[in-house]
Amino acid sequence: MNQLTESQMEQMIREQIIDRGVTDARVIEALRGVDREKFFSKQYKQEAYADRAAPIGHGQTISQPYIVALMTEKLDVQPEHRVLEIGTGSGYQTAVLCKLAKDVYSIERVKPLLDQAFETLMEMGIRNVHFRHGDGTLGWKEQSPFDRILVAAGAPALPKSLLLSQLIDGGLAIMPVGPHEQQMLVSVRRKGSELVQNDIIPCRFVKLIGEEGWPNDLQS
Ligand code: SAH
Image (cartoon, rainbow, N blue to C red; front, side, top):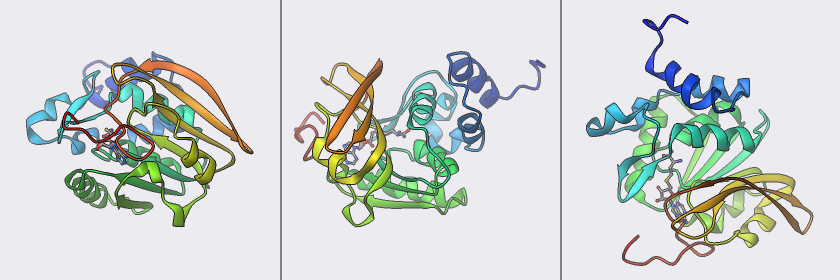
């Protein structure tokens, strides 16, 4: 390894992602294809490759690189898949999903974040993305069902109606579930009218606010 020429991105991928066990070649390739700095405001650019979440305004955060990599790997996205993402945030995870899926449908409740993410992805030449402003816990009925669902904000409990109505039978969802202080990242497989849940790791996300999420209070 030539330490002099290894970019910050390569170092991030090696130390934070591969060394921690996310080794799916397609996921690593997708991460390499998305310039993380583009998703940071000038003020926070130096945080782009840091091993933590970072502020993106409106009380929200861009997820830690490892968490994005892990969620993407666990989602097992195939090239023919249509993916629903809830909580666009900066759009970084969205862009990574776009490298792997046929189409990505991403919903964000904070309009300025959605507008910024739209602009960033358009500038990057990504065209297999569809954005919607609103409560993602209601899903995107006209475009459903989806092969995969990724929720990037913490829900108090599994959003069962969403999963049973908008995930295909046999489809997979990845999301954080549990109390606001700490959640469990879970994978959920739909089997007919059943949802089979498996724990991945403890994690901490911002709140999923909406019909099948937390109520919209003043602190959020
Ligand atoms: N993966 C994103 C981080 C998302 S942070 C990134 O890397 O940038 C979670 C986002 O979910 C926040 O932007 C928040 O506004 C949004 N959110 C919370 N509840 C939501 C809901 N019900 N529908 C859509 N978006 C929601």
